[in-house]
Amino acid sequence: MIIRQRPRHPIPSSEITPKSVFEDRRRVLKTLGFGGLAATMPLWLPDQAAAAWRPAEGKALSGAPHPKYNAQVLGQEPASFEVVSTYNNFYEFGTGKGDPADNAGNFKTTPWTIKVEGAVEKPGTYDIDDLIKAEDIEDRVYRFRCVEAWSMVVPWLGVPLAKVIQRLNPTSKAKYVYFETVFDPDQMPGQRRPYLEWPYKEGLRMDEAMNPLTLLAVGVHGQVMPNQNGAPIRLIVPWKYGFKSIKSIVLMRFVEKEPPTSWSTANGREYGFYSNVNPNVSHPRWSQATEKKIGLNNIFGLPIRQPTLMFNGYEDEVASLYTGMDLKKFF
Image 1: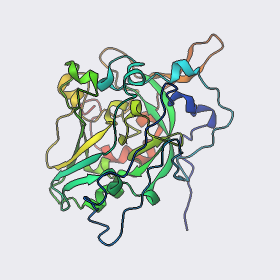
Image 2: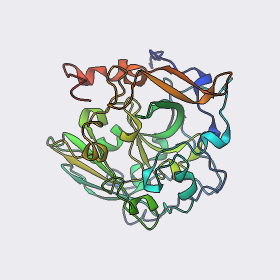
Image 3: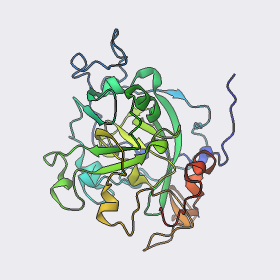
């Protein structure tokens, strides 16, 4: 019997950021094909082909609605398309909010492989179809909170990271998971500039990676992941600031010690390894007590500000991960 519990901070349907936030009207989503399937059959499916999930060009991507993290889009008040369709951070394509949509249209994501290495029993280079199984894809509606004190609500499509990790069988030495974004300056103009040390790097403690909330996302709003939002596969960790949700992943490494991450390497005083959403710990240059709600404006046409929730509203699910930790020190 499945017991369905109401989340502590349920997401009203009016908060769900409209689909137009994530669609790029200047291009048609490219097909994500099946390159490399025969050469990299998944080790956990020795006698059968991996279930193909990537749709043909122009078709939708679907997943099973999650009973707890799902809400119908009803009665929402969408922001203007011009604002929300360009409001995204992806420094590999530039530092402006509109740069990813402007510069990522021709980014090629086929074929796409992910290298798995380190303290794991099934290392190798896997085609994305081998890691993501069609029957595992879920439709989940999550809050998304940027460290810049703005937020939105997003319906993602993806697979729990824990399912992928379990199939790869990490060893007892695996205490953290380290991720890297693809490094391709020819396609990613932002990587030609030293904004950060490229490629982009992120990491999670193993218990964070295995938490049921953590998602490997391959779509959004019923569509294959748009290039500007991290195609073809990205991480979603909804209780952490958005920069922890690394995009366009090509490497997973299981390690024993805390790995370096891009923003903490660039400025460790302002960006910690954990980067949990916390209204009680301000950024050195601004407060995190409130957030600007992208997609919802007041009667004066200005974005609504609302109080920031501890762990972005997922306190019940993740607070136990940090029992006994000083969250001001381990920010």
